[in-house]
Amino acid sequence: MPRTFKLPHFYHSPVISVVKHARRETDARKRDLSPTLLNFGPVRFKIARHFGFCYGVENAIEIAYQALAENPDKRIFLLSEIIHNPHVNENLKQRGVQFLMDTAGTQLLPFDILMPEDVVIVPAFGTTLEVEQALKARGVTLTAYNTTCPFVEKVWRRSEEIGRQDYTVVIHGKRYHEETRATFSHAQAGAPVVVVRDLEEAQDLAKVISGTEDATFFFERFADRFSHGFDPTIHLRHIGVVNQTTMLATETEAIADLLREAIRATYGEAEMSKHFADTRDTLCYATKENQDATLALIADGGDVAVVVGGYNSSNTSHLVELCQQHLPTYFIRDADELLSTKRIRHLELETKQVKTTENWLFEETGSVRKTPTDIVLTAGASCPDVLLDEVLQKIVGWFPNTRSIEEVLEPYNT
Image 1 (cartoon, one colour):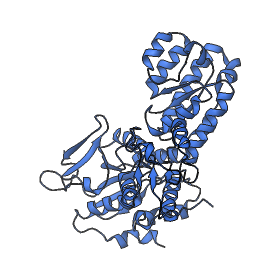
Image 2 (cartoon, helix red, strand yellow):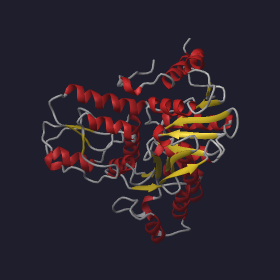
Image 3 (cartoon, helix red, strand yellow):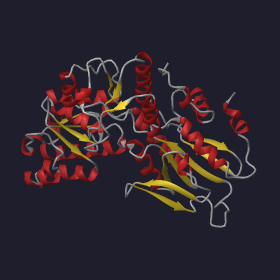
Image 4 (cartoon, helix red, strand yellow):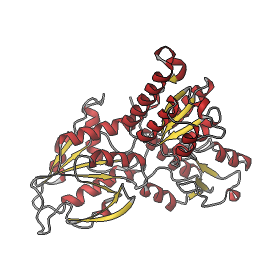
């Protein structure tokens, strides 16, 4: 029986939560990745089998609200955003929680204001050893309300383990994402560390491993992405690959395969176990489930995709990347980005800019592009179900003569 969490009632929804519950009841082993079809007549929504709050996010939210409930008379601080969703973070701010840093690690409030009796919550991404030590020096404890995702901690433990065996830790991640900063900090305490952003960078690292590129190339290519004292002529002889859990799982696997082949070509098959650590067990199951479900959603087809989540959410951006390879895709934060039947405000991944697109769903004449219109709908792991409800209901309201929500949900309420 999977663990259930006590989440605030306002994160639940009358549509999406019902669908999720029904799918869990009929597919407890999660073998069916086919999307859910909500047919409103002129518009149909194809909803991913897996999306929205994952185990780590629900765990973090439960702990944060537990801290509020248990400490009504204390000052409560968050090291940074609890998760990457503006609605969740804003709700905590409204309840009096103060944020010490932003997502880039920039100080918003000085640690000097903290007292030993203050409550400090560690976000789901974890934090660095340097921050832990700075707060410990002020007498602040971080153990009571530590929301670090268990799967992030698993990556830390595996990094520590292979570090003790003299392997260098190669992190697939975004160097200055909170989770990667934390993993880098924990890993470098016991091992050399280098971060690769994508397959292209992994290919360049492979060139250094094989000797086709030298140390000078390494230091230029991977500037600020390796630990102090890193020597590529020594530290790339024995490696293991771990990841930022929100990255594309397929890309992490491809990077590990590429570097494994570089090791094999350099040292031979017989020496593989000495030079390459098997770290496949560090991939986050929830991230992979969401990505696999998105691929199944895409394969089922649609006219346009809407992906909901915080604009600084890494895992959400990867769902957008998958969708936009196959159909027009709009990455929105919430229903407020749906400006009208013709205009949508959304984040463009390539430029990292919020832009407005005209005639995304309805033509200039006001008619829909196709009837019925099939909308692919999914969300990142930090997105509350209620935000998808609001998106769905707003779009449905633009179409005449739709079936009622009660009628559409009838098969899922039995």
